Length: 446
Image (cartoon, rainbow, N blue to C red; front, side):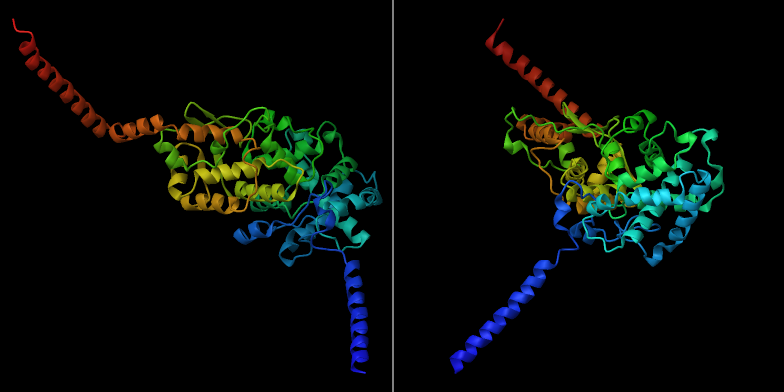
């Protein structure tokens, strides 16, 4: 009897476990969809390790764009203006497309929209499409603030506090480039095409967006122009990232055998200075471009403020999440982390004209790059700075250069040490001459 009872219990238990597991099989992951690693998925949550280092760096402060932060109470200020902006857009374009035309056009992109997010979107179709349309209408901000000539001015927004209050515009510039605050670029392009006016005839969405964000970096117009027609943009963060990266490529050639011992992270700025390596500001259309030539490391000057620090944080997060983009920003951050191990290194680079620190104390700059690069993954053998890493390490390890740098530092580091060294040398020469004239008559008597 006991054996039969045990067998019966096992059978029932087995049936129960089977049922539970079958139910679990039907549940699909929501926080990170299985398709999040595909080319069509490019809007992510920031990696947890980066959020722990900078918990507020990935959260919008004033406006939510897309589903990840939608409906948060602290973002209500701008949320209340979205329908007003859409209404003004319709009035400005004469309503020729009709309100329904915008929603119908975006609704046709629903599958692409859902696939672009790494999380499953728990929104009904109507709610999702309404969110996309209203959020995409913020391209009006680009139109208003990228005006180049008075004839392009959009009079409907004269004195609009949303577009002309300095602190709001500054906050919007940061929020619109957050990794968690994006909508697909194809949605923006659709709304832009539907709301085109005569003044937009020859201007792409890329152009007005870059001109808006360039208020922070002040790049020359000729640099921006190269990116006005760049295709295959995923979202606004990606557009501005590509403008920063430019046309930098991977420098390592597969035919060239490279000494693996030289492909290592480089030393800090002060350590490199001690072995005779100099730092000079470099002029280049690519902010992250770096070259090493005959003992001189040339780096483009970097102004580190709230905008650029936020941009770097979110670019690195994007590159670490999306498999199908270059890792140039991540590589640059690791490179700068190598140079700035301490506040003293940050001071050295500031004195060389490489860093303009608007974050606060010098230790904040070093801490910023240390925290950001802590968990960054990149291939040191295959990145756009591979050759720079190799050349700097090769120069650093030359024993004769090390000795000569030590001599220069010891005897020529200051005017007083130079005078002392010169006096000692003159004394040595005089001593040798005196010894010569003392000994010479002994071996060559008259």
